[in-house]
Image (cartoon, rainbow, N blue to C red; front, side, top):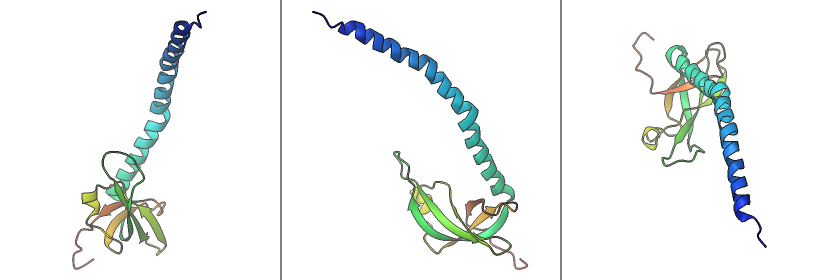
Length: 135
């Protein structure tokens, strides 16, 4: 008595192929329509802050291992800064390599740029350029 094993295998393979054919493009389309623009929009917004946000000194609170998997270790800095009204905010840098993060430790002063419209939004810029005597 045969259990029809090869027929079941063919049916499972066909089901797998149909899922790959119909679901794969749907997920790819969803990514291209929803997630990718959101990621690009966020990155563009951060770049805009980096270019024309208000400058503030920031104190490094911690250097932490980022919770991502991969071949290379990634770190980030947690920091705090005050906006022009004196209100304190906290933020986190983008991912940094161990070499980039090695120059920073808790208590160090670096720089951020933040949004004047929403001072809670900031981007870490690292070392601040030296100030001239009149500033």
